Length: 386
Image (cartoon, rainbow, N blue to C red; front, side, top):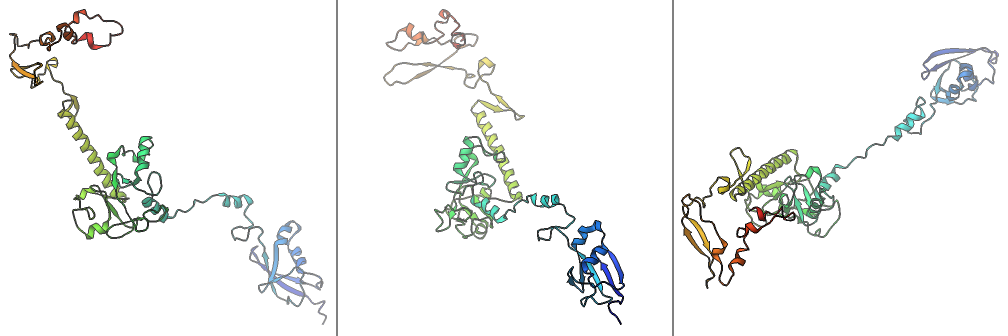
């Protein structure tokens, strides 16, 4: 039997192109018919791009384009699998032949935000000034909400009126509470950023945000919550100064603790304003009526209100005499007029010793008021209007 003239049949399938299995019969095949010729037979001339990217495999092994179809490698009735090579991509597995260059560039053009280490944020909040973000250094203060500041940076911001809006409640030294941070032995003079330099003087816990700390408003010493819980005392554990529960301010507290501190701060500010108004009312400058409105309190006969001293039966008349003791003699006199008005004071009636009456009386405007002539330059002065 002549093998050269024998019919030859193979099967072809392509999962990538979704081509079902098909049979191809070769009648007296040419020995020079290769895999490359088979691809040209399957694909038309218009599909040269696909033809260049296609390849055949047999039992999972690649068949080169130069392999003859009728050879010892390909037995009759063998099934050849047609595959496609996807062009493009940088070897990262993220690109396919269907993607355009624009999509590829946009994918890498978008800058993803850098992830912030939560540990660095925590350490920065506890080891640096909230305002200047510089390492904490003496003197250190906190506000009434438990935020940490370098006093120098906060005072400079107040003087330059550059305090951020979130700290608008800090208006002066009254809103700052000086604190004393206990340094870790060997870290007293260290200025390294991001390194814990303070600790609780009782428990030894580090001041790094992992533990809760309180500051005492009475003395400024800072303790961990664990130390205050284990050593129950109403006096400071360092200076033995008495304090109350309201004198403890939590440092860098959570939202609920900050809300409680803010409410307490508003109550203290309202109480301070009420005390200030009450003090002004006692001095006679400003008083508060029943409705809580500030009103000016007036006294004297000019306003129709008699003062307690004016309402007395006898008025005091001061006579200054140049006696050896240099004292002022006060003499009570009764009203001289029948209508109840007091005797008018005259400077000429109380001339000191060795003084001229006219010169002494000229000091007072009431003595020669008739001789005073108002001019343009002195029109605004109250001298001639009394």
